[in-house]
Length: 291
Image (cartoon, rainbow, N blue to C red; front, side, top):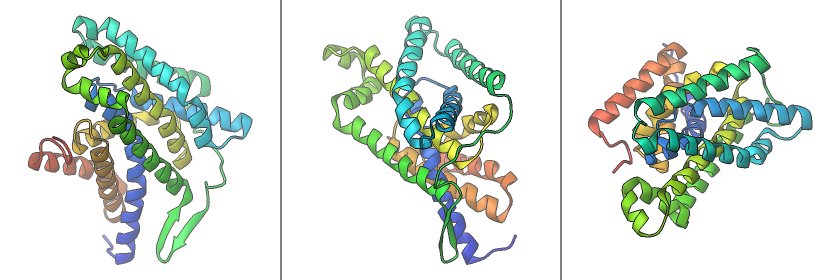
């Protein structure tokens, strides 16, 4: 291991940038798993689907990947709402969401991945944009724009979701449905409708996360598997249902992974980051900002 202050600062900055991306990837899980208690392990599959849709739009129409993702966000919201309705009628309504519901989302993940493989093959795909390639240099710190731009938009995404949850009626209803569904019914609010809206929003975030992913790196259909464990770990580490906690946890995981990759090698990064998760939860079981 070769230690230097320059490498340390550069690794921390890189960790913060990639941590913001992790927060965007995990935001949907925070809504579905952290608030609704729906174990949507197919979420990374929707992110990869978003990457490929952004790829198609960007390739054929020449639209910026992030703008393309914003354009398809409503379609992802409708898809998420429809999936939750099927999940509710088939499993949650019958009280069978534990194992059968988990198998349902695993099936969606498998179908999504296989469909993408059959249509696109296993070759890596990438997009082009003006900010993919250039790097800003601040002394000994290098900041690639292909990571900086997704980082900034990710922060905007987290801020927008937090404002929705805390300042709007729908957002407060989403938070309430996780705490006391009966009380929500007594206020003449349909909790199933609120859950459907929340799950739609969680899947809509996958479109943006997919754009960020294909900007940062080329993608192929199975890339999403790398994020299944990480997103749930960040969700739990930040505190169930806490978007600020998700952001803090994602930043910490990003920094830990970046430091480990820089000084010990990338193969150690997952083990060290999950070790950090276990150590933190041993000290604070509710997560960093959990209640």
